[in-house]
Length: 253
Ligand code: UDP
Image (cartoon, rainbow, N blue to C red; front, side, top):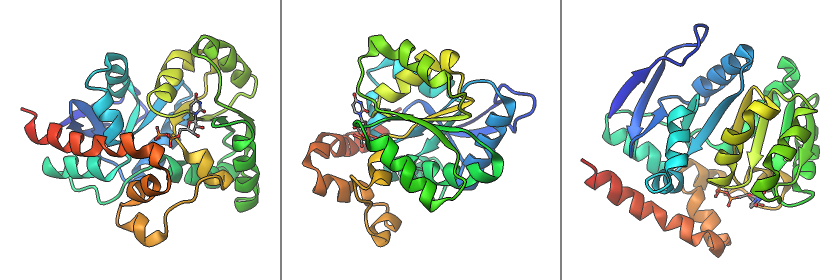
């Protein structure tokens, strides 16, 4: 269930990972994830961070490109209660999730002090800009240098990546849903050359105020996915992958 792998950079710490449905998930809490992201930015080469949830790991069982992205990403965080549970079965008690929403929040907070340049790509027109405005108010000096909506065909990926490149971001958040955002990043990171690109799903909807986060108690119980599903029945198919995920983990040899 567990393995260790060198990160590929002589300046980075070695990675400790646990395998979940064949995908390596880094055994990091938020502090460890932030440290690794800081290292990746300092390294300066384009790198990919995946926030892994049960739906993505199930999708990767039949999507070989997505599976290869999990394997080649420089950091894969445990973004759901299901992934924490699967890691726990293998003897890795992580204790907390590292979600896309929390990474956006922490990286924006850190960007003023570190000078990190941030770009928001994704969500419906206007959402990324509103999210940026709200985060600039929350964290004065937060260095969001550009935004763009995420409604464009895959054939335009390279063109959009060139638009992003003009802003020279250190961190690119891509909020276009799984697996579109992961595939966009893998296909275009050599063009936009953001030092760290992270797929963050519906996070910009949350920061813009379009989607509400669950009350803190529900977040602490790791039941935010259930809260969001109840508020938005379109998320039901995604929620239904959780029992499938559990079954796959229990029956995997
Ligand atoms: N989205 C987008 N382009 C698309 C399809 C979706 O930018 O072609 C956005 C959508 O507006 C939403 C996000 O992608 O903000 C997906 O959010 P969701 O919570 O469904 O993501 P998940 O993490 O569940 O995959």
